[in-house]
Length: 289
Image (tube, rainbow, N blue to C red; front, side, top):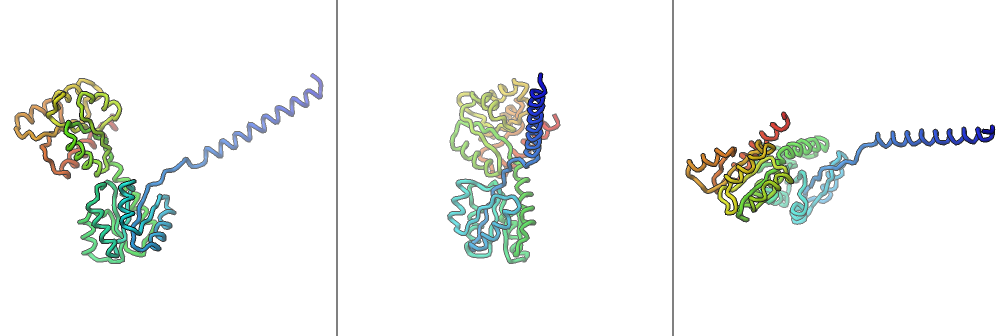
């Protein structure tokens, strides 16, 4: 190889080395960049449009996706279209009081609601507690403190997002249980045909199965026995639901390995408490395992 060829060869190698170094630098810089972030959706309602904008801008600094409303009907419609992770209500107006009432009767109840007001007295704070508000902030608002409270309540609410598979041949009860459990922040999958239970478990991976006792294709006890035949599913909590009040039959159902027996009709709060306790225990057992 001549000297000229050697010089060309050396120059090409140096160019390749420079390109590799540049590539390493670029890849290093890209790896140091923050990954794509998904901010929690927060709705703000106030009858004062300028205040909505002011508070929205202040909260937006703290990595929230904030949408503000000064029209109550738009606010309520938005909740039905896309429920937020949390909502902040300015209650210092007649419209604000209507917004509070709308929150207390809303169908979607899984997200926390925080009140803001210029009134700092025991009576208003007590009323907020009774209405289920997750916080009460006094104007002028400390946006950072409000952001911290929102994050705290969202995190607490997310913990309860248990996966519940409901099995019932009655569409009315399926809709009822879906609405009640979803309102508590749980992920619900409904199933009318118990013969499809194994496929549903495989796809949905429930943390609890809520099932009717009496169904035509396959009753709840038979279905529970089929589930327990699979060693992978022996620890999934199974809760029976029925109008059956005879204790002997309830005990017979429990002998299949079920975790609880609830009688229809059931109070929604009792249903949520029972499901939450057993799903949480199952979740903790899986973490230890």
